[in-house]
Image (cartoon, rainbow, N blue to C red; front, side, top):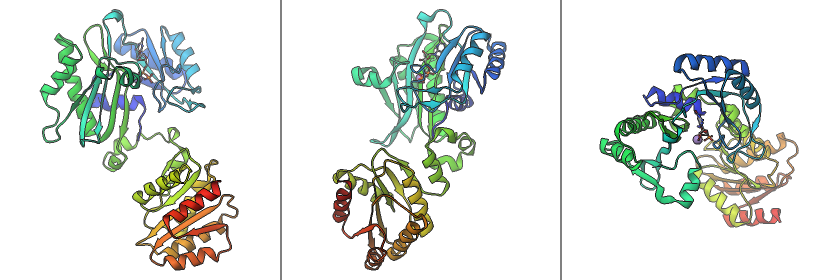
Length: 396
Ligand code: GDP
Ligand code: MN
């Protein structure tokens, strides 16, 4: 689950990480009030207005702007709220901005002495350990740094038995070229950032930029946070931060009916039980010259109601040219699933794309008979390869 910048910063602050302070506003009037309050609290006269959407690169897309007085705050906030923000990380249509963060301007005089770093904490799946990635080249696209100057990106792996050790935080501060008070601040920053990552059950914390102010403070100016969905049951306070407006509506609907659905770009809808079989099925579709339109695991209980719900989800995608149902009848009996497919098909009236069903396992023969005798536009397959060939044929 991804969070907004302001939510990520809230979590950071709760773990003692210094952040660029800000207040969320939903309209221009609230923005002005927020700016006044920040001025009272921090003394800043200048503010940055930052679009709150789940996408990076907001600065490049015109979603982060500096306001030098209250009139500019009102104007800029009014202009950003409601706009469709297009950034290198959004689709061509962009993302609708519902709210902005009014933040204190932290790039105050002495700008030449400020410094932008990059820092993220994430899981290295290769080693199974958490790691801190960091670079002196913050503020800009880290992807670009990785491509052209990879030697400027450092990583520090954390041993789960010991956790982050003080020498590691010092090494990071040293590699970032810091000394004196900034060095000390950075070691504190790293330690509390890591604590925030671990104790919120996050899968990623990306801070870009981490800013060294002209008076040697280290703070998070941006925060991109992703919390592990599987941990949300025990992190209720973060689960409540979910903003459904930012998520794929079909995926939101799937979650509501308890289906594991991930939207993809292809043209073959998949309905499979079990994540392993679902992945194998996606490979098969690719080999047959198609592209999966989704990942969909209907789970162990593929009854008529679930099959129908899954059909409906798949058919919401106009790109779908064929549907491949690939179900292994282990716990569930294949004839039950076949009947479910037939009932769902009849219930839905017209389905305008060819459907290929492969049912293997308990009562597979019976299932094939049911499908073949149903009189519906559904083709049955027994072998995996046979299913692939049929997909190929209907795509041709
Ligand atoms: P992103 O573009 O979505 O990654 O959004 P960021 O929060 O990283 O902001 C983009 C850029 O805006 C930063 O890299 C900074 O250069 C700039 N920025 C952010 N906060 C301030 C601020 O307080 N003052 C000024 N002048 N610039 C800021
Ligand atoms: Mn950023």
